[in-house]
Each structure stands twice: as C-alpha cells, then as structure tokens.
Length: 310
Image (cartoon, rainbow, N blue to C red; front, side, top):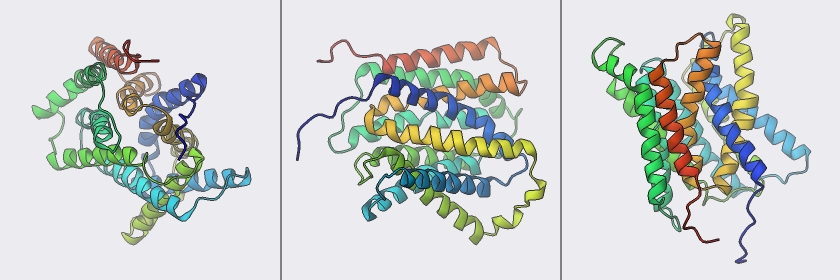
C-alpha cells in the first residue's frame, strides 16, 4: 500500500464546492416548499433523486468513467438509504407536522453528530477546541434564529409541539451524519461524481418503489401540477441534487468533516434571505444578529489553527 499523501485539491475548486453546499442547498428549502404546493412530497422526492441519478450516471458513462463495481453499489446503497431515504425522507415527512423553528433547531444539531461520528471512526480524530467552540457558537446562532418560533410553539401560539415528529427529524439527522462519515471508509468509485450518482440512483429506486407499494403514486396527478412546482422540481434536480449533493459527496472525501458540517448552519440563513427577497418574508434585527453569530461560528470552525504543523 502506498504511503504517499494525496495532494490537496485546488483552493478554487474547494471554494466553488463550499459555495454550492452553502448557497444551493440553502435555496432548496424554498424549492421544496414550492414543489410540494401541488406535488405529493414522497413521490416528488423519489422522482427527483431517480432522475438526477440516471442523468448523472449516463453522463459519466458517456464521458468514459468506468462503471461501478459490485462493492461500489453496496456502498452506494448504504449511503442512499442513510442520507437520502432516511435523512431527507424523515425531514420531508415531518415538514407539515413540525413548526419550522423547531425543525431548523433539530437539523442544526447535524454538525455535532457528524464530528462525533468522525471522532469514533477508525483512524478518526476529534475536532480541536477551536472547532468545538465554533460548532457551539453556530448552534447558539441557530437557537437565536429559531427562538421566537420555538417560544411561540411552547406557549401554544403557533400550533402544538409534536415530540414524535421532532424525534423523527433527529433520527433523520443522525442517520445523515453517520452515513456521511461511514461513506469515507466504504468501497467507492474513484470518481466522486459516480459515487454521488449511484447513491441517488439507489435512493430514487427505493423511494419510488416504496411509494408504489404504499399506494402514494395514486395521488400523483400531473395535470394538477403548477408551473411553479415544475420549475422548482427541475431546480431541485439539477441544482440541489446534481450540483449540491455531488459537491457534498466530493467534499466528504477531501475536506475535514467539521468544515463540511458547517453547511447545516449556513443553509437556514440562506433560506431566510431568499424567503425575504422572493417570498416577502420579514427579516428582523434579531434575525440579523442570529445570522451574525452563526456565521462567526462557521468562521471559527474553518479558520486555520495557528499551531498546525506545515
């Protein structure tokens, strides 16, 4: 086995991948909200991943990328189940049952589960004190952001708090986190985009089969889908899945887990800004303060440590 250390990826490519993770994934909150206005949620999610997986797989094979081996499909199936079926699926399932403030606060714990899982993996290393402080600061910012909605929920002013739904979201977040870290050690194609393609293919097939088995496809009536929903659906495929998810899979190979995990703090802020600019939602001074605290935590996590040897 070669002991050569792989060369770091180009900085410009890293910046582009993190931008896709932060901005594009943040925009998918609004995209999903618009898509499910007239589309049933689970069939939409299954079709989204299936189409994205087929398109990416076909494009890569046409470009000469080798076909995945059998063991690669096993890793892709595990990643597809833990990230896209359980992770995304449970969050989507509870979207209409849990207030957004509560949901965003639970989802914001994802970085903690990711870095914890990375610490316990064979050969893994725990985050340094600066990174833990940054993660805690990011979580504090999200608590400030979600606080008013959460407080209103507790007081009974914004619906009732559903512990079961909150628990399901937490299971989805931990599944996503553990699946992301396990993917580092699973057999996988040399091409990271092929790894993304087979995960989306496996998730799309499983979700679509599940919708057929449970009769959810009976609720699909294409003639009732609005133009807005169609635009959002294709946006989720080409930007959310093909660009965003592929960037995530690649970054989990080349970047530190605690750095990649910061997307869970930035995405709600991007969603907030988009909601204000496109959805006429109000941004308060408290929201801006919360966004500033969250971004400070992200900077603290990704800022290079002074004592790291060259």
